[in-house]
Length: 68
Image (cartoon, rainbow, N blue to C red; front, side, top):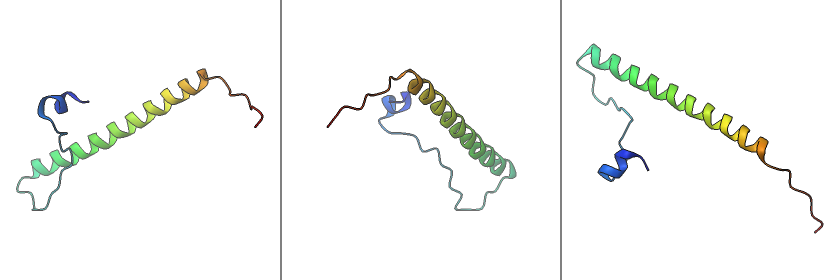
């Protein structure tokens, strides 16, 4: 459970939807940067999960094939 969920009771929406044309070029740049940051963070999380999975799998013992 995230701290935000614990305090507010719901998960924050991190997706930016631009239905209307943005008035400010700075606002548009901010949104593009935010989306880029989210994509990089998702990639970093996926890579970390893969590393942890590899380490966990290396410590697991092989299961023996038991006769049926």
